[in-house]
Image 1 (cartoon, rainbow, N blue to C red):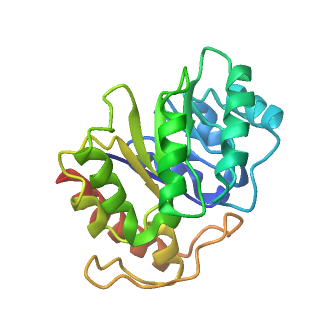
Image 2 (image 1 turned 60 degrees about the horizontal axis):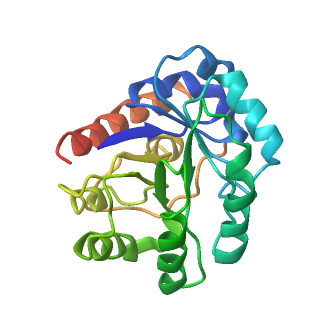
Length: 231
């Protein structure tokens, strides 16, 4: 599995330690334009609302990204399906396409997943963080029922507990994104995979860290990179 780190705009360059870049509109920085790593551009739905799709495409072209997440509407199956049906046709051939199934319940999420998996030109299907502790169970259910097709890549949107990653060993999940190292460092804490804490997420507009916070950030990168090695 590959990992990408979401950083406040002022510290974008430190995401180079990840395997690829996961970019949200709220933390766009010139650094991403020059980076040669794989770039996945989110639509910003989880950060407060998806941005206008034409603006998203302009960002994608300006940053030379590889993959775009079609705007989804959190926990709204019908609105998400409508968005994908309309907007997928506007994506230039140069970009890979990622979609995020949604729904008010797991049953609705699975229905949305099934419908999105039948749409043409979809490259990646993402599993949203709001599934919470049920996310591993949902993914294992899909795997058990042979609905995880090798036709797609699979991406985990966000991460609160590194131990979750161990449950996906051998399932072919391509990647995950997280801001955990920055959030923990912001609060002067080291990630302990057996003692996950509920911390206020670091703001994308946060100023560069202090020297002490950067020490915590380095340790947090090591914790997650060590986990990823074994998944």
